[in-house]
Image (cartoon, rainbow, N blue to C red; front, top):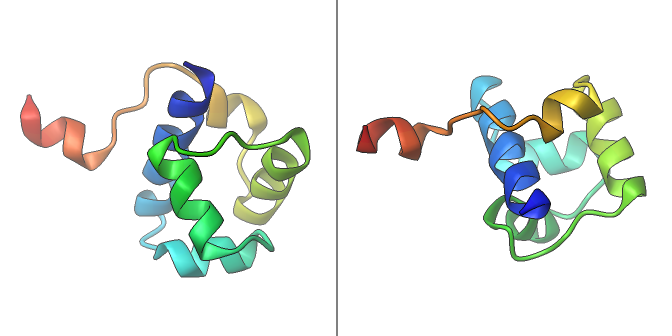
Length: 78
């Protein structure tokens, strides 16, 4: 599902930048609680939220929605 893919990519990008959820959420003008829900796939990000993340994290929307990103927990399973 798209919201899970977005959440996984969001987490991957945040971890690559060595940011906590709180730090990343602040950069994007979002609450850290909402950020965590998005990363877990418990909340679907609106178009406005996707735009805030893209601008705040300096990431293209395409990068946030692409299919082939693994997060750190996926790598440890392989």
